[in-house]
Length: 91
Image (cartoon, rainbow, N blue to C red; front, side):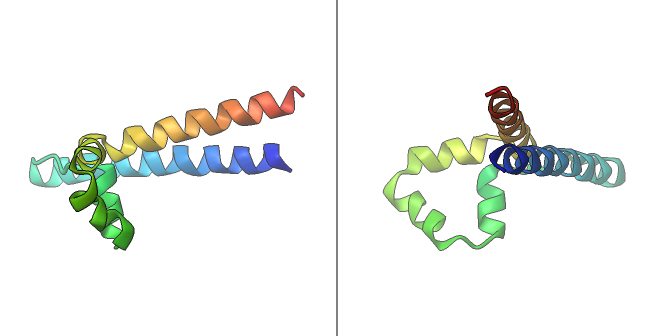
């Protein structure tokens, strides 16, 4: 069951990374301007109130989240989840 869950998380994260990157590419082709999407942008879009307080509490952590592209973060999450699924399947 855990292997299936990790596989689904990996698939969803990789699909999210692909969709995010494709959306940015389409926006660039239409407007000739690359729209930057970071992890902080996604958290602001989700209206996560806990993340809004992060700006006051730990501005360095918020700066890191603002510097990491969303597509790369999702890609990394997908790779880690895939590795966990492969490791769990071998046990």
